[in-house]
Image (tube, rainbow, N blue to C red):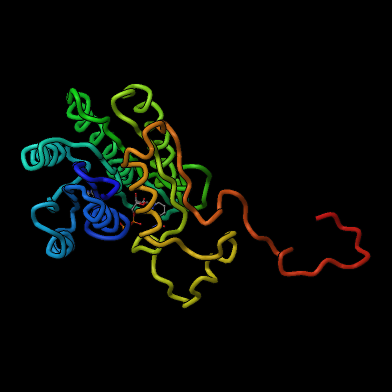
Amino acid sequence: MGALEGKVAIVTGGARGQGEAEARRFVAEGACVVFTDVLDADGAAVAGTLPADRAVFVHHDVSIEDDWRRVVDLTVERFGTVDVLVNNAAIHRFVSILDETVAGLEKVLAVNLVGTFIGMRTVAPVMLDRPGRAGGSIVNISSTAGLTGYSGHLSYGASKWAVRGMTKVAAVELGPAVRVNSVHPGPIATAMLGPDDAGLGDARFAHLPLARSGQVDEVADLIVFLASDASSFITGSEFVIDGGGMAGRRTIWDQHEPAADSGTDR
Ligand SMILES: NC(=O)c1ccc[n+]([C@@H]2O[C@H](COP(=O)([O-])OP(=O)(O)OC[C@H]3O[C@@H](n4cnc5c(N)ncnc54)[C@H](O)[C@@H]3O)[C@@H](O)[C@H]2O)c1
């Protein structure tokens, strides 16, 4: 029996990348999934490879309230309820603070922050009004950029710190019926990470303890756990999946043998 047998899930940003991997894994684990995105052609292509009776792609801009109402109504109509929401859709923006604009900041916040908020607010009443059914699980995808400061990440970082903060409040308000957790990926090999133009491969991530980027299926494993009843006593928590980047980074010292008589304490 799959880890998500009988559950109904909504996954945003599911046309590619991590969201696609999560939609696929959810179906493989026995769930019915409505996965959404603004990329209609990609979403339809993914849907074409999944069983039509258990996976539906819907066009959805997460920053638009009416779109959310339509998605939640369709999910309930089609599959009866919503057990799991993965707020995964996001946009990335790499701009220095001196070059950032109000419009640029607002654009990122509209998708990453407001989209996550509307998602929780629209789905929560359905999850709260289900006597006799196991509790709901909301998983908000933040980032390690929501745990520390990276250059060029003013808007994206602000949005991901806010997602982390909203997650705590939602966990407190929506418990005990609904669990809400945040996930903080480090570099994951998707379109958002950007192309490896210089052909460096894993050398781009040599500073990480695990010395490579993560794969979408590795993140999907964690999301399945948080969506499932196996995580039934976990809420308001943050899950870092970053190859160890938040623990620390390799430094220039790793490339040198210590001088025998240097007395350097490293
Ligand atoms: N890839 C990484 O290195 C990385 C690191 C940390 C966090 N994350 C987070 O992981 C999540 C998944 O990103 P990914 O790596 O799969 O990147 P991705 O760009 O492949 O996927 C993001 C998806 O969100 C969709 N999207 C964008 N705006 C939308 C909107 N308004 N409405 C609906 N869908 C929209 C995109 O079309 C895309 O399919 C995001 O929340 C991202 O911020 C990614």
